[in-house]
Length: 189
Image (cartoon, rainbow, N blue to C red; front, side, top):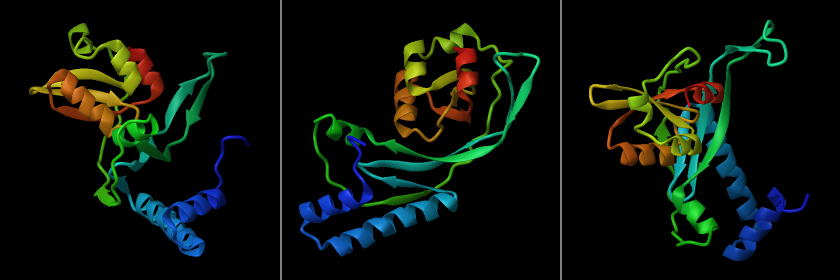
């Protein structure tokens, strides 16, 4: 496949660029992968500053209507999926911006975020207007309500730090975050 770098090719490139023995590079990269997998399975997110976050996103089971036959429904089972979210610095570097060298990995405890069903929810226009629709769609986040000076938002990926920081800055409010599905987000927007 064109444009695909295999694990073997990646290891060779790292060995060449770092001038470290290929066997050591191979063992190190394998260990990094196993460690990240182990931490995710243990319920912890892995944040590598300047690179990105490895997280587990949990989607609850729910009943979904068949688009072709609304009388039929299907049960979508609960699933937990590993996701990688590149950091803004990494995105910038890929786009040709500034380069920042970091090698420190940080293990953070998984956060407990509850699911909110928005399929029957109507959000007041005043609350929706706090975040322009194009931004809500881009970051996959929608404001739901204001509570005690905080903004309750529903997100498809509640561990997307870039989206969270952007929404905080844009609205000037602290956030209470809930998990939602793409269908829920589309319903509200």
